[in-house]
Image (cartoon, rainbow, N blue to C red; front, side, top):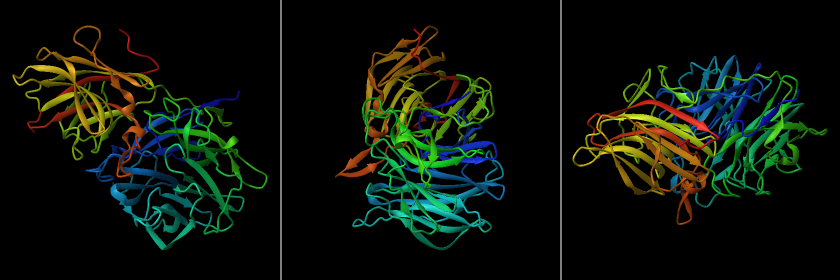
Length: 533
């Protein structure tokens, strides 16, 4: 019986997929930007059913995100396998504003996809979107886009390659430019493959928005020259705004044991035609066929929602529970933390309780206390029970629908000037903080249940105190939690990128540094439905 892949296979904020097969196992690594653990890893045995393994870079030994800007941090990792080791190359972006980019690229290895991963070794800072290609002759090559900061030059200066010695972990020789890209511009996200005596260079073009795409060029020699596919893009949605899957591009390829090929690629699902994408950039799969003269093709060069699955035994995974009661000693693979790893100095997991010690303000980029998970559907509900004893208005804890430091909604418990607890709602839209009436007096020492309900472009907050949920009478715009809204410009120059996606999470602030903490008894996430009342 023919099985079907339903796209996106990785839903919500899961961009820049690097796909890899090792034996009968398939892995996809995706970008995480300012979120820990860095580089999310996903596992499948049939390309249909995927499970999250969590993040690879889960400690400060492996990754330091202190102070990185919104949508900085981890960009476009590359996952490969050689010498019995998984190799991960990745970029850490510390600055990207005003035409500058301060970044560094690293490599780390592990005997298993689940670690342990070696101390990262620095490579270079010439560009981003790094990947490794291991050739049949035993040599390895590092690819990246070349960055040019000069104001009178294009910032994207083509795709370059440099030999990488696996034994020493060092780069050899000088970098060589393989291609400057096509007229669409912005050549990035390179991956190299070898088939039937040809080297195939697959790279993204057109930027990360609605002009995004992927192209292929080939050469008989690894160092070129490379001839672009005369048929045009391998994949793009730029010509048809009615397609369900938009922004298609940034491909990487994988071959099954029986010779079937698939492309993993970025896509996005806007709420309106060419509108805002609250779910961020997601990962989809498309079958790839080869022409008689040796070019890879995706049907119509378009991203399809349903496609035939490969001829592999079906391998489903158990569905994760909707409710996490924090019974495990560490956070599960669906959780992420903002700009710092989940260490015992600020987060404690015990059966039936997650204790989160307060951190910086919502604008803080060094030590915020936010534990969150991705929004994966237009309709979903997130809820938690909170126990919290604020002493002042500097103490806040609750539930947030979050995009970045400039765009979020927050339902939280705090204290009035007389010390009495109160429930409030707050928003930040394009950096402007707004308080929402009304506020709800609370009984000291009594837990409160908090709800966030996403229904397409609308967000509703509710609360419960020993009874069913009561809705706060405030109308919130969920679409401010989108890539498109997050982009910020100054004098025509992009100053803040929107590269992530909406998150739902548990947030605690301790602005006066007195050691306040909050306890969350559970967190429940349900998709495809709205809140029962």
